[in-house]
Image 1 (tube, rainbow, N blue to C red):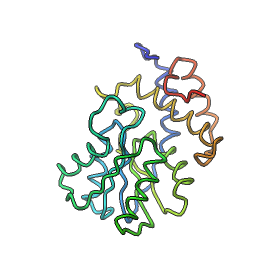
Image 2: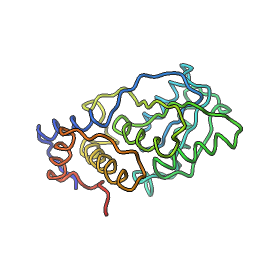
Image 3: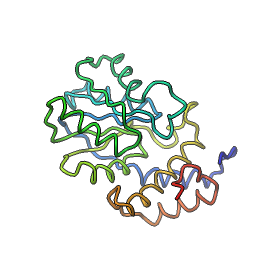
Length: 220
């Protein structure tokens, strides 16, 4: 459901959800960077900057077509990400493309396999995604790649600065609500580790669902 007018209380509650979903972990150097595909090309730009700043010697661009790009984009998420990284000065031989994944778990699983196929022993990684995807990435990586020493990071953008012409505020809120819902549903299915849900975050989720921002929730 798309809502034309955004009331102040909706902004407040969406900000609470944003703050819960974003972890804000400090960076540390790693064996590789994994830019996890999405419809937000700022993730690719940020991952490329991290590579150029020498946080890791290899950049994996991961993503085929996910739920937000399937049927809309004609080039894979990984392909778009890699082109951005190359344009910013990342050497092509330092970029690995993983173009089959359609979700977060596959981003991690297929990237791990691709690195192994290229003879790269990876013990640590910097996982790069959208700000509100940080907690879901952690919950997924805990299950999919439990031996990996990882940190999660995202473009340093605040909630109020994040919406754009391509990703309007209505869409941001609706996607965040869907990702929060996945934290609960996927933990029940053992797809992700169980996260501690704060009372404030749960109230924000319930408020936003009742306000109509439920279009990206899991349909069970």
